[in-house]
Length: 443
Image (cartoon, rainbow, N blue to C red):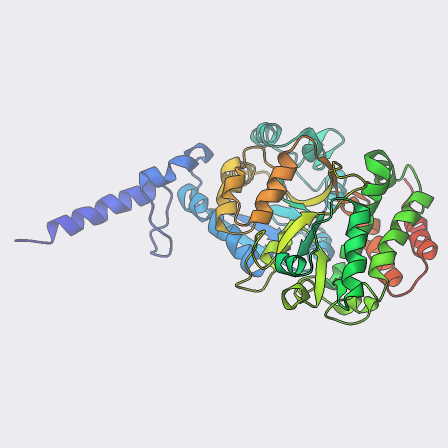
């Protein structure tokens, strides 16, 4: 029996399928069948093209993005070249000014996106992206990437910042209940402190972005104490940054984060948090050296390998409570895609990133939250991700975007962060808030 004919035929057929799907034949890419490429047919074929992507995500988080769009890239023929940079906020302007802007950038602050849009550097979203944006996100979410009535990008990642991580076992062993109001939260705080354990752990070091975890705390408390109207006025600077209501919120935060009896569990005195990276800040919960850590849903991906997440596991999270049990204020953040170039392959890539298909596929790879209406919470990689998605989809939730991310970049990613560090270090509240107010750019 001759074996040569059938293998030769198989090679021809597989090669034809590879060409049909836009798959390179260099042996480096996974070979797809025509059925595999079916979901990507609407994006067209763009063989021999490349799209550069610039973002702050690195390491495993970057790997998960690349794994998610690998099939899209293979089937469309687009070579997606990703670059993650921990100094994204500081270097993106240098890249643009130097004539080496990426095709697509993942902006962690709407204020930064707005700056490039107003400068004329970004390209307006295509009709296809606009249609997907209207279908996938609420008007509020789309407004964060809209400048003077023009949509420039779409949400890529969402996160719920108003979470308190804790050890269910620690709570259970000490007879503690998850607090439903701010007063109950303070009662738990005091009970833990009285037992000899510092109730809170925190870390605010983040290279050029050091200080942002403190600004999140202040925004969260202001939203709970004053509601959405005052919060919006503060972010828009229609009331001063150092308004008395803001001072009250800062002092409330200070009563926790600047109090040595309450912080910094597992690390040292309260001000030690200035030298603790935000990535490792919650780890003392696992050893029982602190009880609670306020941090966003994305922290699910930062726990040490092997940490189990769930209501009866190693760690879980509850919503930072408001004044009443039924109150559901949620502070959140996100990353937005926007393009510096306008080519067919760039538009195709943007449309894929704006689809619910991408969001659901990314969720299956590992911890990830999206505010896209087409996302199924059942695809969430962790129970906390599922909780975050349900909160974002709940019409009763009063969601507000991270204030520092909406403020002018020189303030939100500059003087506010710096003032937060100085304040944790001992600066008086009014002095710290006043320095930010004086730095606000005039228009």
